[in-house]
Length: 235
Image 1 (cartoon, rainbow, N blue to C red):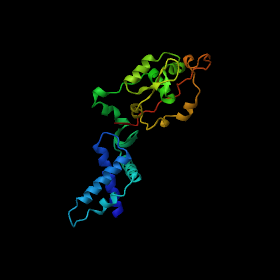
Image 2 (spheres, rainbow, N blue to C red):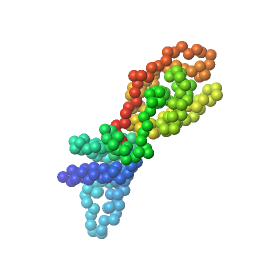
Image 3 (cartoon, helix red, strand yellow):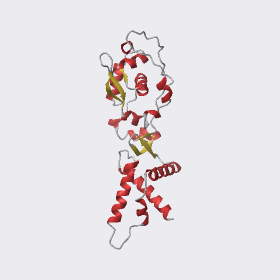
């Protein structure tokens, strides 16, 4: 009975931590918050009085216990048909509205409504996501058209960033995705992108500027079957 009560309290505490912040919380931070608070409760207990047994139990929790509490909450939300859930982001966990309610939630923030990317922008973003770091010329070799405006659009929306310069003549700029990209497409790492391993091995056309003296005889890679994931929830 004591164990059951302890698990219920831990689950409630984890839920309160996630509810209290808009920032993703890593497991380590939640463990520290629970242990530190439990220790404070014990230290400030009145002389001769003992802290509740379940508080003492909280001094021994670890990340596995917190993850178990999160799984319990998610299952509970699903069983109750709640409009929100808990999702893992690149830097931790957070409470989010489910994807089917995202449009309703965005109505509260008219100045922050997400403008949909055009198909050319999505294709450009997909090339960068799967083959980063990559130069503008490298992207154009795959798409077969100029991508100046598409690259600038993605930079302006903070979906890609400058990663440095390539060790090539002219030192062209290298581009890669940002943390905002991971957040937008609801993935923790680039490895969670669809068919990531296979698409990284596909041989792509090489721009003449990056392969001096050799003609580009590769056929253009079609990105039509490739699609980035859609966000699972609205934050």
